[in-house]
Length: 85
Ligand code: SF4
Image (cartoon, rainbow, N blue to C red; front, side, top):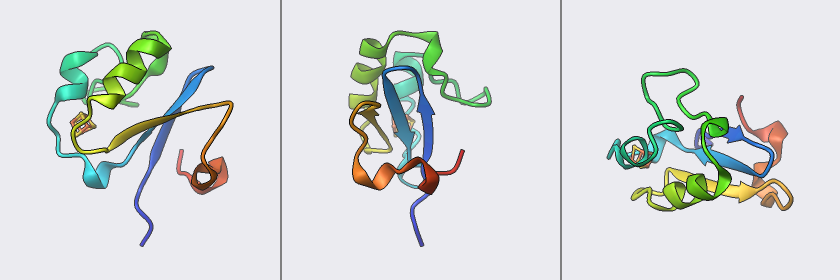
């Protein structure tokens, strides 16, 4: 079965979250709570900070559940038609 992926975009980047491998460390929402808030839906809102800070925070995810790509150069397996909203 394909791994679940959720995507969240601003004008520069798309953040991908894979809930199946999230270990709920809390590092993302302690580090950048305005963007990552598990009590909110959607729980990731990129417009609440700037792209550079978001990219730095995503890189701190210890499990690899969070990743990002530049909207200018999406990887081949992230065709928007293959991802859930
Ligand atoms: S930092 Fe990564 S592993 Fe930790 S809660 Fe956030 S998404 Fe999940």
